[in-house]
Length: 461
Ligand SMILES: *Cc1c(COP(=O)(O)O)cnc(C)c1O
Image (tube, rainbow, N blue to C red):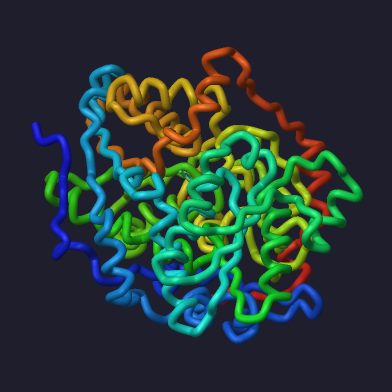
């Protein structure tokens, strides 16, 4: 009974998979908020490294070479193991075969490094000296700080205030790698000041922190902004997860019937799913892809497909996404990385076109699942990853009823060893679920824009 499947460094994929070149419906373009005209890669150059802008809007090349210097740093922790969760299967009494891709073995404890490394690399190549970003739980900020240090860049990170307080050690990790960390909203930017003036005890959100980091990038010479999720180039880099998993599933002699990942902006979900989904496009396979989002931030299951801003202050381009509205303020759940109002452009189009599904998971169900996983498979999962585990358990339980030996693959996006404060709250009974009324959802959506009202016709490719 082989427990885990490993690839040698030589077997590591040398290219990322760019699903935008093969999707049946190409995503709608990002728009300039003032003119409502589609943006080109050049329009994004002031904010992001130029190569990342080109990757963002590349609808042509299905495969993009991973630069040798990026491969070198990937080798610090990749390839990551694919593991068969025999003990979890047994505890559930399911005939399903459950596999997980263990991204928690990265030095920063999550998948986020897969994109932080190439983002820092392209910035360095283009002569950038400073990078800035926002971070929720601190996973992205830690990963960017690490990657910036490896390439000799200065990093400034705005951390969502609630997470800054709940997860103090992530700040210490960022500082270990030499980053400057500021709790957001802060008084150091106009965006932060505006929000604090209106709501003095604002707990922060990813949307607000993005506004602050983008403002800093725009007002600092030689400084670029980086993003840990949502954008298409981030998900592109994350496809290394699924490309490895595809080879490893082959070693296991199986192919997934269901692929599951938790969902914040969609990067780890897209990362593990897209390399398998490409076989669905041509009709070869009928794998189901399930995104697991928190019930308290349900953009996929209860949001609408509209043009909306990526940040609270409305600095970013308008993006066609499943959204709860950019002013939506998510409840203070412990899965900080899932507290975001919108979904990436690619996954939004795929959901609209029926290539994927979404489920919502309450905070308590997610921790129940995470604890069962820890007690069986021996790894304490990140609160975000607990959502994927909960969705996996639901599917595995269905197999008990039907007797089907389905092959389920989920992404363990990170470990929870720096999130033990949230486990403490669970054990002391202080964690709760958050109800969200339909009225609250409708109210926040009013600030986004109906796609049809812009008369931009979807381009089939
Ligand atoms: C950031 C994060 C997520 C959510 O981000 P996606 O872009 O949706 O993948 C999930 N899990 C962990 C551990 C994270 O750090």
